[in-house]
Image (cartoon, rainbow, N blue to C red; front, side, top):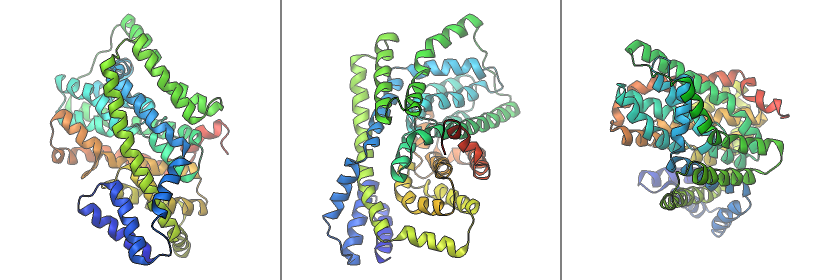
Length: 430
């Protein structure tokens, strides 16, 4: 266990010094191997980093989904999704808040990224809500908390990472994300409407019937995108990577030829943004793989399993403890980093306790994504504030009820596994 103590101490020290997370991971591994006297050559570190990426073909979907989200954001197709959700829920009290949340649910089925959702939906909805008389803080909080739906609703980059680390079916995790995503969306909508009624926020009138039909037909090609991805995977017609590639090709076709909203200059922006994000994610995953390898090499998963067995903690209590751990880690790390660092340890223990792997993965993912909106490093929190001009510290108190709703949904899913497993079982998951 000496390697683990040095590994964790070195990692915390490097982070405290301001080192980038990817570099801190690999530097901590090197420090642990050097100072613990482990019988392993340092050449193992780059070998593990390269080999982990070389055999992880499902990770090819990550840059494709990143580019897919960028195409929809840059081309303005996200605005059409907002128009459709306004027809559905705009007339409710605080209608634009509900439109914001439901739009995140639909856009999450395209981008798979919380930060992309915040930028695309928030760039439209925050100014629109402020113009209609909603307080800036309320508009920003609704935007950033609902953006956490994106990593849950398929296609989800986070689910692909979990499937890779835990060797599960991406299709099963995709299917399992629908009901939890819908319940979270519903909870946030109910809370937003209750706040809107209390403060007499305005309703947003729905368009006339003819205009509504026109808007729905206009947005229909865009709304088909998530179905292309999920149906292709579930039916086995295409692989995960192939379905992502098909969806990306489809997005280019509708953006360039149908909507005619993607120009050559826009393609440059799409490619540059995709490359930057992919490079960061790729480096993080490669170095995190070495971190996970050392954790496993040192026997930490076995020790954690033995500890759980000794204290005789039950499956439900274990999942509640994991939820708390993920909520705390989410304040300092993004969800992808938490997956890489914790799943190799906690997932085998969950399986040993008889917890369904899909159930555990979905509950874990929901717990992790809350970190996108919690300080000090919540990325969506800072993106939302940059759009609205609000100060981060002014959002903390008003945001607590929204976080409480998301935690309440997670607790409900822990106690009622069928809410997670119903859809995968309907498609043959055993």
